[in-house]
Image 1 (cartoon, helix red, strand yellow):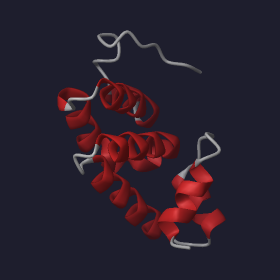
Image 2 (tube, rainbow, N blue to C red):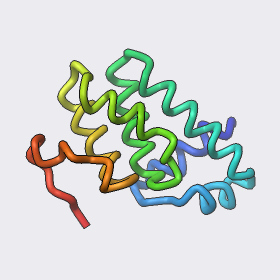
Image 3 (tube, rainbow, N blue to C red):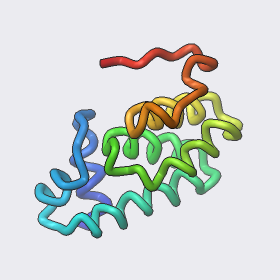
Length: 113
């Protein structure tokens, strides 16, 4: 199985995972985790709403280690044609860095602790 598939399998539990913890669990470097994050960003930008939604949810579960996804998530939050993708992007931004998500209130969301 590839690192991407292993990463997605780990994220399927719904819990927060740091990049370092993911690298340790997968037996790979943080750089390999960053490559997997980049693949998720590409999936989020693919134009396929199902792939985008799944990728955004996975990025959200990675949390601050997915900081490189912030520009793509902002674009999705602002311009995706799909409400669920926009909402997932907003929630992912909130998880990755609360300061990056000024639109959460406009979408009627609140932070869940």
